[in-house]
Image 1 (tube, rainbow, N blue to C red):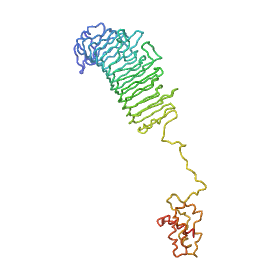
Image 2 (cartoon, one colour):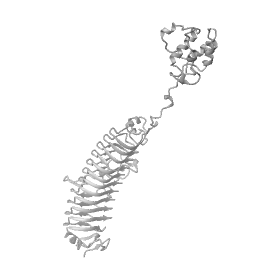
Image 3 (tube, one colour):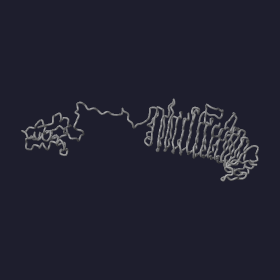
Length: 488
């Protein structure tokens, strides 16, 4: 008799399908009831989840081509094999704490909704996890967490040249990928991955000072998606950077568009981030506290919403060079490097286009718009041998000093015995304070008529009033008159 438990029993949304499970329900496989496998093998499609009892030894289903739910195998201590030789589409496979030496074989599966490997540990040197899905190209959500796996590519080669662990070399698309806390995993490589609509999160995946396991351990970290062209978010981090790799590289050679954030944080020994084709980041770029990273280049990046780059202070300094030669659009842009040789002026072209910009190195903040006090040029003091004009404020100002005689004084002097009253003439010291204008050379030889001559000029016309600039004659005429008066 088939044992079926339904999460929703026979709810209005669930439909009971004889011998082939319940959509939205769960079919339980438990010892010693093996007859249920025969019933399921008669189905083309199995509906709902399949829960594998911890005491189950073999799960082999021949015949079905699709399973709409998830195969759940948790805490299985004696499970030796899971084989779905004819299934092409699988709703999910959750493999948690199996503690096994066994094989998982999906030779025809092309699509899995949810794929989870969690707490797969190797208790002994010769423990292994056999995995094969050579046609798998699409996964909605991939979670690889806290395992003893060494990577996501082929491993554990057999004598005939085949591999016990095939990894995921043909995976092309995913909604989300999460690879975290795998202490022996020094290589996170998905060679066929082209697009991730959601997030790629990689973190805490090597511990050279922690557990060891011979062939499965490596000292250098490699995160490489050589075919990845676009992603929602890309995050690579390490919460405990001091336990990490000896060296590290992040290689995204054809990535051109990130629809969210690009974040590399606390990766202790990463020495290279390779993103030569990246042109657009819709969100932010974060590069924080990567102690081994000294040179950073985004040669094709044209547009990013905001940038935060902070180099950690080390014995070797921090960032020495940061380059964004093609950047055209950016919101905020903030950079700090503790390296003495880092030159913020190399980012001047970004300062001109960013809505908010800051840059600093060990010498302090970079602010070329604020002049230093030493750059101010003091005004020269006038020489004591040169008179300082007090009444002439500009070249076009009235050249006559304010102490010149009034109209009344000049008229009185002209009406006396033919000699000009010397008290009515400006003092010599007063005249020398006025810049000498350019005169006609012929005028220097002409002493002009005597004040008693009948053609003598009317001094009331030639002497300016002390108020009312509208009555003044042109400056040169007044200057000529002044010199004539002095000569007489």
